[in-house]
Length: 267
Image (cartoon, rainbow, N blue to C red; front, side, top):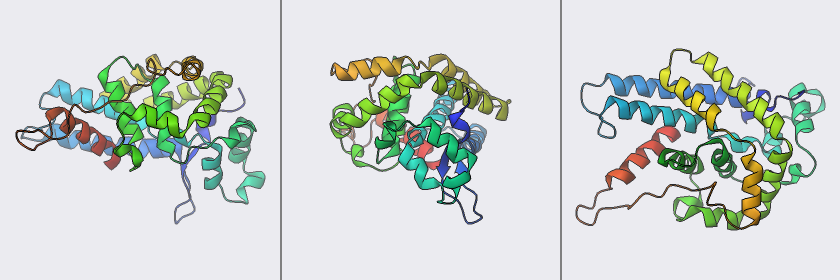
């Protein structure tokens, strides 16, 4: 394979020093923030209301690490990447040339104006959607920036309505390039395994992500989409209620979900 796409993708444009932040750097920095939060929470002498038990805390941070790793996959978008490279870079920069070769002409026309929408679609076939945490991860990934989906429930019909042709076109692209995606993704995860050798919850998150990723499901998702039934692959999390009628407070379920979303956004 001549293109390892995750090696060249960018997440942020150049800073004041002229250094653009790669997707790998961005996720590494966010995981560092998660470790800081983990160390703070687990060292507290009072109970953390959200997850009091040690086992619950470990599960929370493992799934937060998964959300961090997946949250910006929607930036695997030709128009988005094009914005992060300066005009002079597009003439002879080797990273840009790899990106040009990776995206076929057809997929260059497909664009999601909010990258988190595509990120949540990626998460739908990189996670095991049979458990509640996977649904929560997909949903916090979708909502990690403010967008109109904060007020839209159920989420799935709204996304399909808004991005019908783009979803179809992108899933065809992933299906055609699934071997490149798979190899690049595995290398991408291995990089973080080596970066955080002593952080158990990150190691477990990555091993689980490696085990649940199924790039063949991109084609199955496309076929389900064409058959107008995505429920097997895409199932967002919906908090049971917003406010308790009795107390006017958030339910425990909704409260924990908002803490999960808040920690992702903060990291």
